[in-house]
Image (cartoon, rainbow, N blue to C red; front, side, top):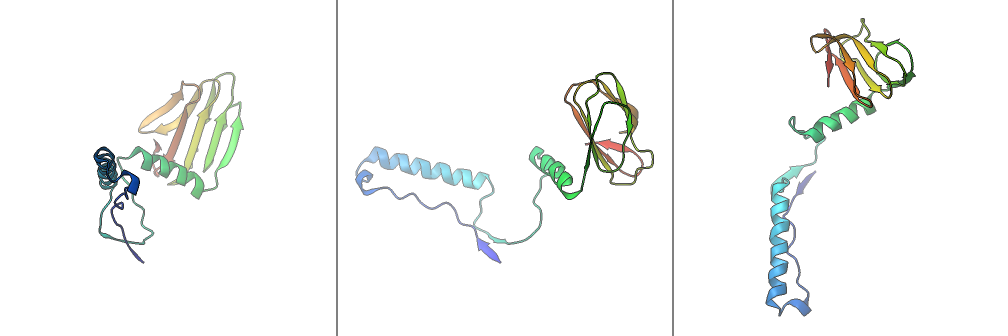
Length: 158
């Protein structure tokens, strides 16, 4: 299906305002602003095909967050709350509610595309494993979370 995307319609000035030059000018300014906003947000008079292709921008923070949300929606993640040391399994959200320091050990037998989310709620959390080419990371900031994806060799913080 093809849809013709048109510019915003011209504003209709009510009859009672048509004789007033100031009001007419005001409506034309609003019309110009609407057209400029439409153009700046991707407006075009080209035909647009109705497709299922994703439109993304790799530099867009919105796209990155949408991808993160979609990854959570597409897979069934197990939500685990812990107060003690734990080893991850595939597709987990681990919420750490520890009072004292604990270790979260990344699965040493992970397979490509495994994902883990680790959230620190209270005490310090040491994440044990190869992350971004480094050995181990510590979550020092309360309420910080890590999103990790395994590429077949290394865990990568997203």
